[in-house]
Structures are given as structure tokens and as C-alpha cells.
Length: 390
Ligand SMILES: Cc1ncc(COP(=O)(O)O)c(C=O)c1O
Image 1 (cartoon, protein in one colour):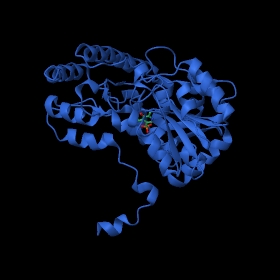
Image 2: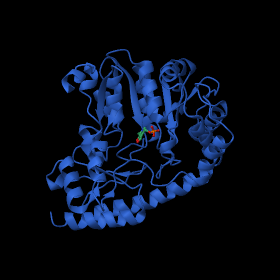
Image 3: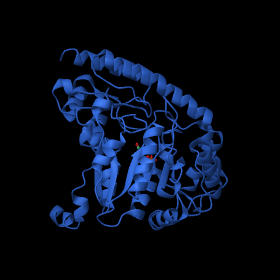
Image 4: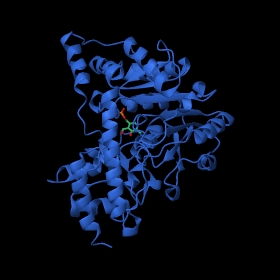
């Protein structure tokens, strides 16, 4: 029966692996007492005033579809927010698309631009969706391997080396999941020059931008001549602790937003109105809560990275996100073996670096979006296991 069913699956889908993160955490979830440093989602509940806005929306009977692009009021607020924080200006009537998380607007962007066989670059290790999503859109993923020796810092020379004829776009993600890296303005400037020279488009996933602890976040969309060749992606999941609301947005010139709209309109219609109402509240009044959460993450980051290095688990300081990415090579295990071992012996769940692409091998991702207390306990447990392995 299964053979018959399998025969219907499209060739380009067969080879795409399921996300390594979910598979691994299905195992962890069955273990009592396990501390999860695994899932990339805030441990905070969405701030009350944002939840209240969703409740009010329901009370007022807001249960309809919205404009396909999203509520006009939300798009107005997004335009103001992006102008204020990213120094890039978009017309809310036709240059902003609200979707179901950055996940959906990323998919719309790729579906809008990829002709079968077009190549799309991305720097790796990276968010698990990029390569799979490119393949689902009949594109060819081209990884730019960043290097452990320099803390996985983004280097334009790596991009130049990886470039091939037929590369139409590059996805960038700063601060970076899973390494916590950021891009200095000088590197972005060089990238901007390179993409202009090669006539490429940039898809810039800036979902972690508010969670920048060192330096100032800069968007490539703000560089001269870059608006017309950038699709700027952002969302509410991380900074506003709103993963379950499923709201993200894309900003780009009209022709690209119109093309993305076709994918969005025929697949999704519109993002849920209740979530859109909550997102308005997040943008208008959410800054103090967001800053409080960011301060907590920073305190946890300093603690866990300090403890990792203390116990001999070499770890660079993530400048953004809520992920630490320590090196486990010295234990002579693959990152998957290490993650299984530490789950089994210390009951601490981390994600094998290999889940983020081959350049993540030798590392694990430990999310510090869990309580300080959990981090203290997780570090103690890991130390007691690792000290016996030395
Ligand atoms: C880099 C990156 N982009 C996009 C997403 C998806 O976020 P959303 O909840 O907005 O779909 C994630 C989620 O982990 C992420 O890490």
C-alpha cells in the first residue's frame, strides 16, 4: 500500500530530508527530566497587552478575511517600523506583504523568483529551511560555507569563491541562526557591490535583528541602490515572542511584491486577522517588553557561553539571536553522536550542528531561550558528564 502511495510523490520532493531538529526533539520530548536547549523559540509567553489585542479583536467580531496584502493599518505600522529601525522606506499600499510567518513570505519570495534550475546562494550553517525551500521551488541551492576558524563570520571572499554562473539570488540571515553571527556594515557594503556586479537579488531574513547584543544591526536594504534588488523579510516570532501567531512580512519594490502576492493569494489568501491585530499592538506598544526580553537573553548568553568555555567546550560569543554554537570536535564524536550522548547521559537536549548544513558539523546548537535556572542546571549536568570524558 505504501509503495503505491510513495509512487505519487514528486521526484524533487523525495530527496528532501525532514528537518533534523524536529526528528531529534521528538526523542527528547519522550524523556522525563530532560532540559531542552533545542527548539528555536522564545520561552516567554507573548506579552499580555499583545494577547489582549487579539482577544479584543475576537470580542469585536473581527473574524473575516483581510486584504490579501494584510490589514492596511498593520502595513502602515510596518512601514513606519522598518523606516525607523532599518532605514529603508516602503510604500504600504503596494510594497509590503503580510504573511504567515517569515516561513511563508520566504517561500513566496522563492516561488516568485525561481525559474527551474536557477541557483540560489545562502551562507551556511543556516536555518534548516533554506536549502529545502529552494529545492521545493525547483531551484538549485548553492551553499557558501562560512568557517569555524573565524567564528563563522560572514566573509565576502567566501561568497565570491562559491558563486557560479546561474546564481540569481542570495539569502542572507543576520543575526544568524545557528551561529549568532552578525554582518558588519563594511561586509554588507562589499556584498552589495558584488550582487550589483553579478546582477543578483538579495533575500534578507532579518528575523533576529532586535536580538542584537553587540554592535548595531544594519540592513542591506538601506544601502544605496539596494532597495530594488532586495526582498527584506521580518516577523514577530522571535523579538515579540509571537511564534504561535504566525505573522511575518516582506518589503520590496512593487513588481516583486506583486509576484509574491500571487503565491500568497492562491495558497493562503491572507494571514489570520486576529494575529494581524495583535501584530499592530506589538509594533505600536511592544518595544519595552521586547527590550526586557532581549536583556534577559543577553544575561543568559553571557552565563551559558562563560560556562561552556569554563568546562572546556569552546564557544565563541554570539553577537545576536538566542543560540550558542559550541565546538564538540575534541570529543571525537560527530555532532549527532555528541547530541545523542549528552541527551542520554546528561538529559540535556541540544541540536546537532549537522542539521544546519555540512559546515555545522563538529558543533551543536544550544538555545538560551530557556530560564536562567534551566541553564544553570543544564550546564552543571553537561559538565559532570564531559569532565569524565577528558
Ligand atoms: C532564520 C530564521 N528565519 C525564519 C524563521 C521562521 O520564523 P517564522 O516563525 O516567522 O516563520 C526562523 C525560525 O526559527 C529562523 O530561525
